[in-house]
Image: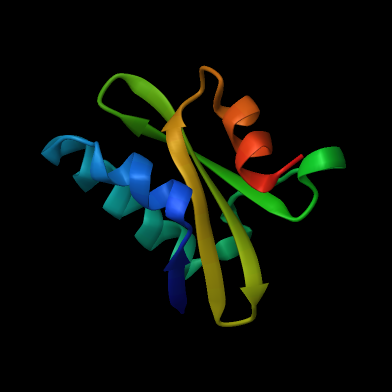
Length: 93
């Protein structure tokens, strides 16, 4: 599975601490193995999947889109607070 990243995802991931990046890497591996593991969104965010994972004691979300059978694009990562607002803003909605 080929995993691409959006500029928004790269900006957020670059600011993470070492232990947060480890949790993110694990979540990305799980998504790459089975893209249907995330919850498909509807409405404004149709086509976006969100995978929930724990980062320490916090619940974090990883947004991604499946471009083809062997390619997905990571869109956004972060805690739940204002996550969907940021995701809509990054998609231009």
